[in-house]
Length: 342
Image (cartoon, rainbow, N blue to C red):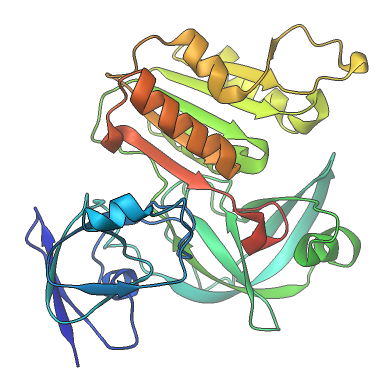
């Protein structure tokens, strides 16, 4: 049985087959629902069921609390309609014209910087991947599992797809990348996916906040903004434990040096004596709180460790007046990728 879903306030409608979640059906038909992990963990696809009923399971309590469920909220990556439903959710424009593909690719180059492997993937000559800066792809493994990693390059620079993979001891995929993967190896991936990309229709100042390899999608977005002459004020906070963990610091410093509207602020939580660190210290979201007493006129894009993303969302909206609909995030869940990617 096909159930009909009506999206408010846009009025868009689409059908959901019995085997699909609401999000799966929306993506299949080019309807721009927001989403991140697709696994009930991040909460990015949360919205309200206005009419009708849905069933949902397999999600984490922190992504959808009991109180939110009682208010009619649902995670559309886990929700299956029990008949026709109407939902209320903030749609994402510009997603419907991008096709999700499954493609082969060749590992063109593996560069290891500290504990991060920078992969350059080459697509077949006859293929091109259209994507929005900040989106991610799923690497499809031979055992049927997948590993999700953000695309670190901007769409205009698409000779290769660039991925940043942090080494996680015991992580099956990252161990493979660091110890067994060879250049010219063939892999398959599916993408692009995700709604973590710049809302270009806005003219608000932008705050990017990243931890670890959360730098990867931010890199793609900032390079896209530079390429397209977007001069909205950008403040980029990059949090890491030690100086070496800021594995492309020179690149970020170069953006700030070349473009007056871009400010780069690195923050270390566990600086080593040999780092001779004189910059900001502590938690990266706390640095934003120290610098901004009012975020009501800003957009914030947060990417990296879930604990950082959650802390930023909570404090920015509660304590600094950031509107809920101006916070965009992509949390990296290690249980899913087992290798420090998305």
